[in-house]
Length: 292
Image (cartoon, rainbow, N blue to C red; front, side, top):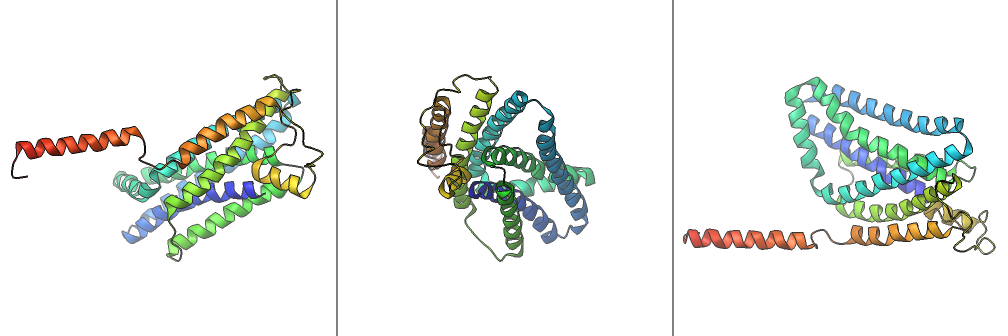
């Protein structure tokens, strides 16, 4: 349940922050007349995200078992790809998100009502579709027949909305860059479990082989129906008897992705090259103009 709560919190808070930034900017600049198109775009985006999630859930029930597993495995992998891209993108742009949204909103204000609706729709819609897909994949991976995974997601989303409201009211201030870094790192761990589960689905669909090749089996030590087995599955999508391919894919994704994600921004060689280039340009300017 915690893993699903984290997904709802992390994904929901991104959307909440986007909404708060858009609304606060319009209010502070005296453009309350533009609030209705913004809320219209947000409403359409939320509606499409909910419809997309419902389509995934109910549409897949009409398929055969192998088709369900093939669809579930493919969408789980797609969800992991999108979420991985999203956490890296947010880590890079968290510091400049406000300025970026303000620029887009200024351009939309100059273009008219339709542009405002589209701006809000695109800003929130992307988050909504990513959230719907990843939540569906994660709930499917961790579901044990109970409603706990879905309840975790809902609680996370409600918490995100409440935190967004506190941000808007100015009652809460946190370092967003650090927040998204730590929650993003935890989300990478959750995504690794979803990826392993997706691979298992593809094996059950007979799209991938190796279903009978178990890496280990600790079911006797960590029973899936025990409280600690349920906890491990809810947080990490832990499976007591994974296949060799599942463990291999899990490790190949988690270790390098987490290492790259937690590496400080600006530690790569490209940044050193840019710094050296700036130093060289300054030296050239000083040489050309002694007064500099």
